[in-house]
Amino acid sequence: MHPLIEIKNLCAGYEGRTVLRDVNLKVYERDFLGIIGPNGGGKTTLVKCILGLLKPISGEVVFHFTRNVPGRRTPAIGYLPQYSAIDRKFPISVEEVVLSGLGGQMKLFSRFTAAQRKQARHIMSRMGLEGLENRPIGALSGGQLQRALLGRAIVSDPEVVILDEPNTYIDKRYEARMYELLDEINRHCAIILVSHDIGTVLQQVKAIACVNETLDYHPDTAVGEEWLERVFDCPIDLVGHGTLPHRVLGKHKH
Image 1 (cartoon, helix red, strand yellow):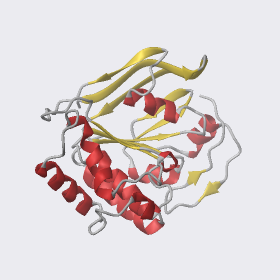
Image 2 (cartoon, rainbow, N blue to C red):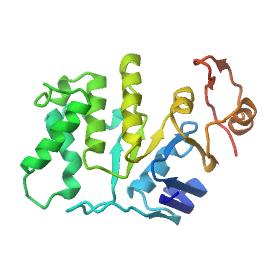
Image 3 (cartoon, rainbow, N blue to C red):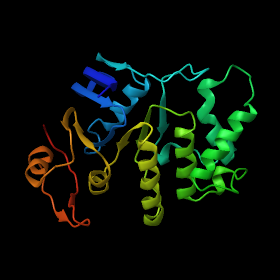
């Protein structure tokens, strides 16, 4: 299978402190990769390196994108940031949020075309946001805002979508619908999902990467009790989650 992203011997950190070391990973076409790990383990740092927001100390991130989208000037990656990173007081409408995902196709000071607006409306319909196009984001519920941000992430027809804690501030009813949407999206592009909710992640993804300074990759979701205890190296409680258990994650070493 064709890799879209290759991470080779990556080391990264901040202000002289190494957060990630010797990370190697491949993300393939139509992959659905779950990234799990404790707080401070390097999940967000890894995402920033992929997005080009943080320059690695050493190593590299190599892209092998294949789609030729007219006007696209940036790598074909869609991104849904953490909910806490969004300023809900910013005066912008739902439609403008979704259209902003096409910014990489725009020339300086140019306006969105009728075709781009039609594309955004189609995405808003897929997200269940009909009738909310002109509503300011400050007037949205948490679930509605997450849907608008997901629409922004996929409106440019990316080859990879990165979702950082996408189920934050949404109720369980919409969470089920969100993962249905992700299943549909995954038919057309790869997904990288960062989450602390290991139970939900294991039910949805095709492969697992556990990040805590280093990276431990599992090409499937057969992550058992022995592996969790060895990797997370902390007292744990087994919690029922359907037929699949999940655990509270603490500090651990690879």
